[in-house]
Amino acid sequence: MATMKKALKRNWRKWNIAIRILPVIAIVVVLKIIANRYEWEVMELNALFTSLVAGSIFLISFLVKGVLSDYKEAERIPSDLAGTLKTLYDDADTIYGAKKLDSALEFMAFQKEFLVSLNNWFYKEERTAVMMQKISEMNRFFIAFDQAGVTANFIIKMKSEQSLLRKTILRIDTIRDTGFVGSAYAIVEAMGLAIAAGLIIIRIEPLYAAVFFNALVTFLIAYMIQLIRDLDNPFDYTIDGVENGTEIPLRPLQDLYDELNVGEARTEKKATKPFGRRSS
Image (cartoon, rainbow, N blue to C red; front, side):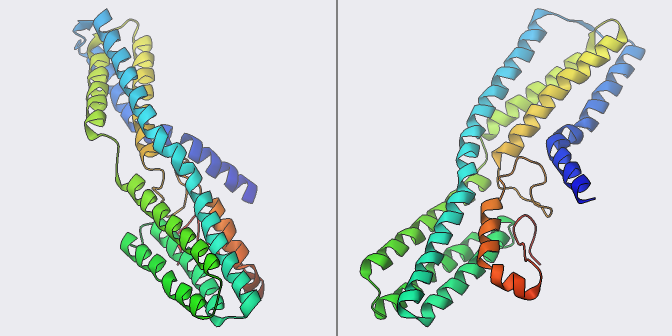
């Protein structure tokens, strides 16, 4: 049963865009049949129309190139975040092992709580300003370490990781809240509508060939526009986690959370998994 659910989820992620645009394809096909039935096909297929299709493909490739740069960068971010948080946790663990400081234990607990807040932030249940405040709260632990005689180089290293964490959070916030050039989307969508309308009123015989080509061209253009919109925000998570298959997986952060809470999970006879779904 579990294997079947995983297979269905995997297939949904792969085909969900195609399923989401099916109503658009259906509308175009119905309009084409109506246009053929009532003789509204007033245009003949010509080179100008094929040039319009080619121009749309060119603009779509332009949009794809633009959004892929941010997407490729975003793929590394969860691993970078997990590495930074793990380094801070290990540094605190090292300080506790060397000096048995209560503040080190408190900082380790703080890191676990920060991971939960980070999950909530990914799902927009936590404000970015609150995350910045939590990162700044690490300063009080660094002050306690300094007062306890922890080596300055050690604290400087942790401050460097704190700065990197802050920059990464702000970068994610910029990527997910800043879309690609709106006017570029507008012209591609306008050309897509023009092509769909042209396909409806262009005479192609026989009817089944006209329906096939109408559906195929509309499918390709609508699919690519929707795919670009999904790629434009790789951190757009939903209640079920990575629903669309274009969001960046949070697996590195989930693995880190499981690693830090493995002892507690064994005690409670269950594993808490805040990443990949909303925390309760």
